[in-house]
Image (cartoon, rainbow, N blue to C red; front, top):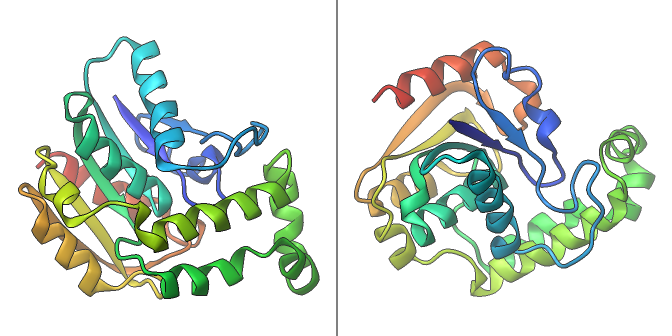
Length: 220
């Protein structure tokens, strides 16, 4: 079985266009979509949601396609729960974190600024989440933790034993090719795949091109 894990401020609905093309199950992380925010966002919290879903499915191991933040959670699972993860495919996942990176990204998650400057996006978020402003604030706090050393280490990447494909779109202006290539090199069975004409924002990409990518790399 393949699970689809969404990005920051996203939900399972991000995969609506590709689910008819790729068999799998899209998950909402805690606090996202129709789930109320009840505790601080963390890698452990998000990973436990996935583990609960795997346990409920009766599967021993699963494949994961993770977009952006979802890819980071997938790599955390592969590093810490290797017996449950068969393979990982990421796309547009930020892999190198520092206080400066987190601070720069957190400016994009200020709900008051979003509401004032991009009201159309605020309306989309309001339709997506029970409490979109809480999702923004919790995401910013989560990224701050990553920026201050609370994320994956080089040693974590090095202990991942399953096959991993780090996907990077050549039109991605959030994630760099250099960080994607470096981390792919740290993972024993890791490799980098560069996707032409693919942007960071998932919904701006052609679903068929994503399908072709996933099909190609999942078949080895």
